Image (cartoon, rainbow, N blue to C red; front, side):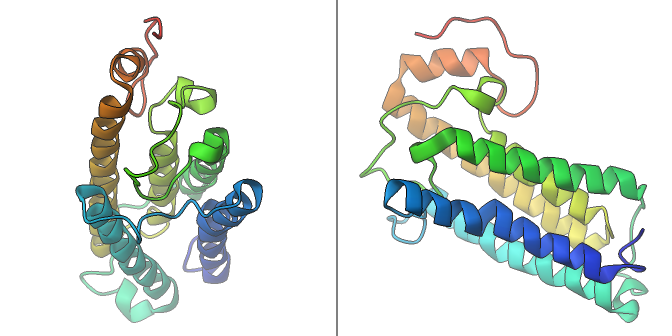
Length: 210
């Protein structure tokens, strides 16, 4: 089952991933807590804001390239559109579905603390260390990266691969900036958490939280 044989199925999942991983969580959060978690556009200029907006632009470019790969034989046969390496559909779909599930679950475990963007004027009241955050300091970014990788592997052309790498670099930049923010906010408590839990993947250490 390739994107060439069933482009409608692959593009439908890509749209579903955006709805389930971004739009629906924002609406649910607003309903539950009475405010939108999206603070990216109203926040003051910062590394976090600039990087977030860059990721959004790259995401649009990635989506356009995926749709073109699905619908345009001419693009697929071009130098920029030809796949670099193909993997079994089971691998790419497992990454896409598993990554989306991880993304949604991680957002849910953050509860009211979840934000899209960074608002220094209203910092989180508590450090989130429960749920999936016991195993990864950034499970949302990890899930988003895995989902995006799976969908990229449907047709890993040079342009799609480049967009994917740039987005992942952006997510890593956001993670580092958020850690600086949390270290300033929670001090030794965050330092102890960072020593115990890996940034993305790895084996948690048995270091006690303060």
